[in-house]
View 1 (cartoon, rainbow, N blue to C red):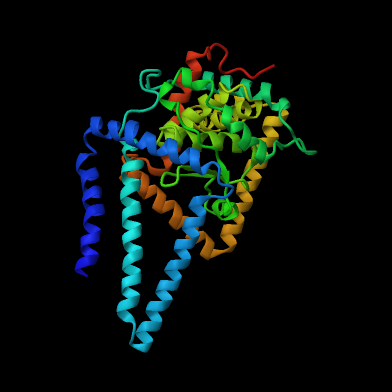
View 2: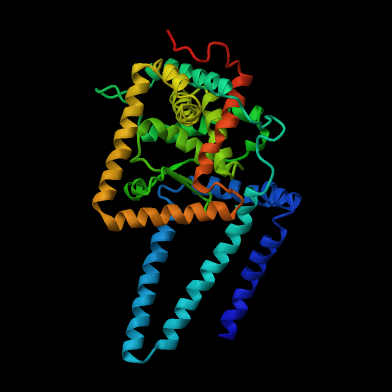
Length: 373
């Protein structure tokens, strides 16, 4: 027990240091922009060469080890022998997890308390309903213009291949880094998740795992939003830790990428967030602008609504899965709140003001409440 406690002292001290120092923005910014950036760059580059997700492999292995250890512990209790050996094995697993958590704390959590990647390039401010409407028109027109240029299936729904989405992700940040230089440096490439179907049941479309530097996308989710999701997860690898910041960065990267499928997906995602905000403020303006959606934009929104509706129906038919999904959501919501994002999961939608300011700076305005001809 003494040896076990001695091994736990270093990760405990490392974790305590973070919680004591996180109110100091300069310390957090240095940890995030220096040590954290090196970690993200090196691991993101190395793990991109692996054909499978290291995160999923390690997670699966740890889950199996935990089951084996617990089974060994139960058998030891029943036989009344080998109890100490089983406890020692579980202790070793706890130590490994503790050191992994300590690395994660300093490799990623400072990003929630560091300076935003858009600092100096864009000023966040409150936006008016008129500006929201103007931004919605701007993104609607971008979506309408690029929608016919992407591959579609026989029903007219977005049908670019996941492999192409992953391959072309290398180009997504080539345009935006001149305006937001804090985003440069990463070499990560998103990966398809083995457990995509399970992720859908929890309404997650992607994951960035700081310990391995891997960005993951749920390739079972609606295809039209996958390029945006890839850009969002890559935003985390490039230094945008907060979810609202990552959403804004992803849209900005997509629309300046000169990669059509990414431009379209970014505009579609921005429409989703800004449209929801405008509908709450001025339903009449929202309805009028939405009436200008092109046919392909409508088809992709409809396909997304059908997909998530079917997921909700499946969850409703399975109380155990619904409980699991709720537990995952609550856990992540708590994680975000514990790291300075007071709105928790709702922080994803707080990119609206950033997107609106970005659109207004690019000429959004004028006939904001009028549908496209």
